[in-house]
Image (cartoon, rainbow, N blue to C red):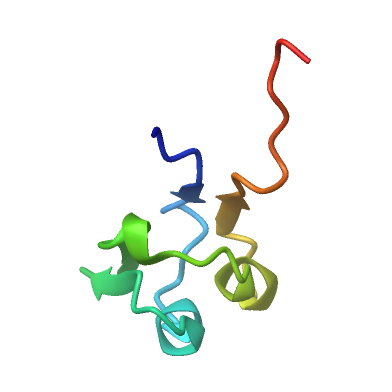
Length: 72
């Protein structure tokens, strides 16, 4: 089964505040060179906390729960 969840991080917007890393209940993200990086996408539960709490709108979570099949 193909995983459809995707987390996009706009590195130009990320200021390295670490809020996303701190609020993630599953440790999906970590800081690398002062920029958030996805390290464990399979653990993501799509809680959206990283996206909602990012003060710079640098994170977008594309949830598998909300995606529709193009053939529908």
